[in-house]
Image (cartoon, rainbow over all chains, first blue to last red):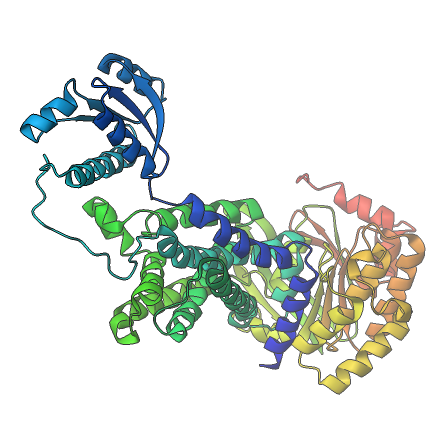
Length: 364
Length: 244
């Protein structure tokens, strides 16, 4: 064990002297946590709306005003005919058309009901779908305000959002992004480490010493493990200061999972590093895995809306489990008892990747 | 007593036989020159003796341990310095000494003594806190050699230790080698400098994976009827069919 102490001393001195690493360790989490939640936002705002007002009445003007006042829409086009409206969609000027028929006001007053047309550009399905549903909701509101019966029959259903009452996407994204951060540090940085010793030739000198390979790998794993904890702590603080987000559940659970999760990903990184002979190779391999892991993790898109086969693949993705745990603990306040299954899986991943790392590192 | 013994040691890569049935012994405290043109198989042979590569066939024992089964014990009793400088450039001089001394199990007290002693011998006291990357090549090589024998191994393997080093520093380097041999450390060295071959107790010359000659420099010169090692080397290496 004395040997490990000397090896660790060496690793920490090298990390400290690295011009690049210490900065990355602090800058990456800050940037990612501050910028990404705003960018990876599924809330639809600034939907470009084209209006075809065939009525030109007070009431139609009030409707348009209400729609724009909702904040979700930006009035970009006012046309006189449906064809003109379509042209504005084709030129990307509008995403959504609202056509108000002739005699809108009159008919409403007389019959209490009238049909308006909503046409959505569904090239971006989410935008189209969310846009038209926002729009019909606003029209429904408008009807109620004015005391008309709604054309859309709502059966008195009220929905309440639990755990994230304001449907704030940042609350949803921030815990997930923290997972991604740990993944990058564990996976990428460790993948570059052993292979850089290969490139410099220093590993040759270590290989002729009696240092057992498990000890050498351990001396590589521990520093990244500690760095991961520092990062997680920075992440938790940033989430609290910038987004006012604190875990509803026990923060200890998050650290416990992070401990095992970091071991898993550092193991993967070291395995990649052992099989690669240049840093480019290692970088590419790590990149390949991380992209797949990220896209299939449920971080950006819900797993339940993936096709069945893709859902099956996510079962083999460690990122998926930790993202779920983070969201459950942060937003729902889940207890460890709710997460034992996740914990076992993450432990198995840690074991698997590290056995892989030891097996792929050859002293010869 | 022999520190290295090989018997028909062979290493093949597919159909290519890099080292072809070599047999020799090296005694304790001996300086053994392992010569040969580029591609003759010197480095491959040396890597097998260091436990870095498993032989295809034949036997070899280093410091009394078998190169197939006891590579980890071999590693405790040898030192190795590769062609490529391989100390940590981003560590200071004393930190490199401490790291390797520590790995080989020197006590803290012994480490401190050894560091002072080593820096004094190398005349590097003023560079104790210099990053190794900042040292001139010759100094680096002397440091690498001293680190390779920090644990007083039975034998030290040097793979072209003086490549690219100026003649004055090379001379100093060989003084270090002599000092090590006086302490009964066997020195197994490859080189392309024939003047260095003259400094060895015995030399072997490898051609195309085989050992073509093995004797003291004086005996080799007289049997080839020439007056320097350079001519001995030319007479043998001319037969080589392998290029670089």
